[in-house]
Image (cartoon, rainbow, N blue to C red; front, side, top):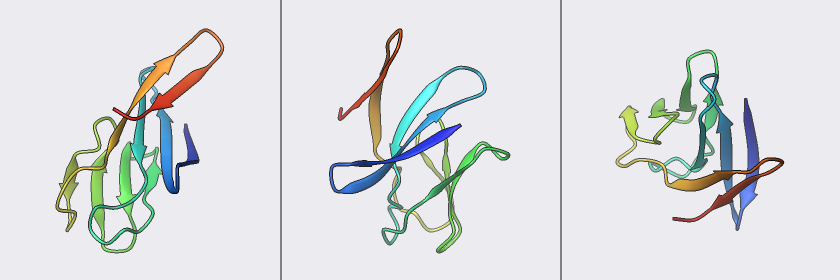
Length: 87
């Protein structure tokens, strides 16, 4: 599952993967700044503007025009909370 949220002035996402791991990444495409979306069925992050694809665990740019990975944030999972912070 994914939660889209504002992190400062920009959109970000918090992903809880089926294997129990968590990832938080910027939701701003590194190509031209479009907002990316998590596609759970393909377990990838996709930018519909120009077809960019990112790894949903690391934010690495996998295919398409994005020149660099999405920014990754720290995730700390507590007993009743999840905290996201900048690296």
